[in-house]
Length: 158
Image (tube, rainbow, N blue to C red; front, side, top):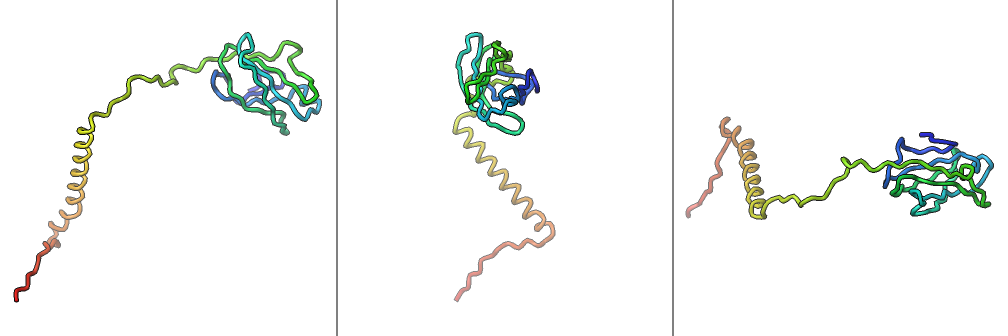
């Protein structure tokens, strides 16, 4: 998604507490800088200021960052010679959206699976049912066809 002046994001929306990949092909890239870092913060007061070195590629400088909390994402770029691209003194400022609440899992009371005694009883019944089904599938066709021979014990008397 292209938002402005040679800055691209890998997403359509900038959402708080999510990761975003930023690609920059602006003035510093065009002038042949070898090292560029993004200087950024959040909200009107530039809270949680960070500097992250960007990786130089054929497509521009790129970095992946985690967006913090605030109403805006504010940033500018600086190269190895202390040259700045700060949108002609206005910085780059984009609105941040809140994480949709329907995607959040709120912790409530833990779900009870029942008492250990009930779980054990259910487990034993499931084993008994599986064993009965196995015996029916295995032995019923033999009994019907007459191929079932009961094992007998031979006692040799001397």
